Every structure is written in C-alpha cells, then in structure tokens.
Picture 1 (tube, rainbow, N blue to C red):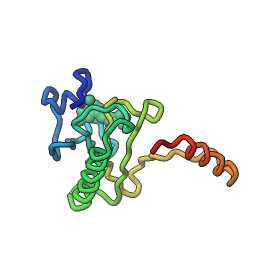
Picture 2: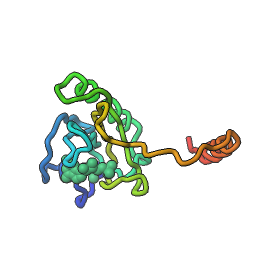
Picture 3: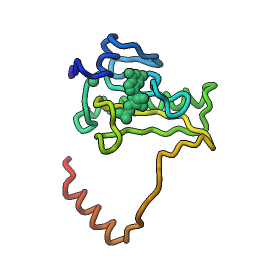
Picture 4: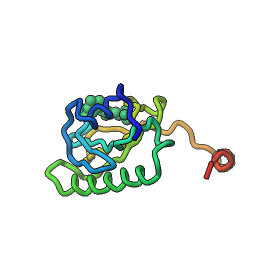
Length: 143
Ligand code: 5GP
Ligand code: ZN
C-alpha cells in the first residue's frame, strides 16, 4: 500500500500521531478535523497515500463517498447541529489543498453559520463560451 512517512495523515493512520477517530475500516479512516470550519467537521481519509484523487483507485474513491454519505446521515441524526452538509475536496494547492494526502471533508452546516464556501461568481459566460469550454474538456478527457 502507498504510504509517505513524512505525511501527517499517513502518521495518523500508522498510529504515530493522535487523532479523534469516528470510524475506521480496511479502506478508510474518518476523524475529527483538528481545526474545524464548523463544529463536527470530519475528514474521510483513504488508508492509501495519494496526493491527488487522480491516482486513487475507483473502488477506494467510491468507498470514501459511501462513508461520507453514512457520516452525513450520522451527523443529521446526532446532537451536532446539522441542518445541511457540505462535502468538499481540495485537489491541488491552487484549490486550497494543504495536506497532500487526498481526503474528503464532511462539514455540518446550519443557516446563519457564517461560513462561505462559495465567495462569488465573477463572470457570466455566454452559451458559446460554455460550449467552447465543454469542448476543450471533452477533448482532454481520458476514459
Ligand atoms: P485541505 O486544505 O488539505 O483540504 O484540508 C486539510 C485539513 O486537515 C484542514 O481542515 C486541517 O484543519 C486538517 N488537519 C491538518 N492537520 C491535521 C492533523 O494533524 N489532525 C487533524 N485531525 N486534522 C488536521
Ligand atoms: Zn499520506
């Protein structure tokens, strides 16, 4: 299995660093974010070290999504204030990724919590611009 001895999340997985666990199985671990955006903020982390989702095997990525769904239901049923949930994944430093071990954030939300994940949409493209962008993405997509 891929691991990186310098990686904080690999150290948590190896039991070399503490974390407050919520769920563990053979593919993923889920623990409390040490610096939560909102109370109850969780991270779903694959045991395998992959910096980008690009290299995570599909079965592992699907498992992360299933665990995130399960934790979303758990949050909604729990005493943690949860009127809604954001699932969030930062792939690459430019997207805000700080820990280079791909992971999925599960963030409980409530009306008026003051959190802004979307900070505005600077432009409204024309239909032609959308078509051109879609064509570029389709042309580069690899099966
Ligand atoms: P990223 O910006 O990479 O998507 O998110 C990294 C997340 O990991 C941040 O929300 C940050 O608070 C959390 N984090 C960083 N180091 C640790 C740690 O040592 N333990 C825990 N539990 N969370 C961490
Ligand atoms: Zn790692």
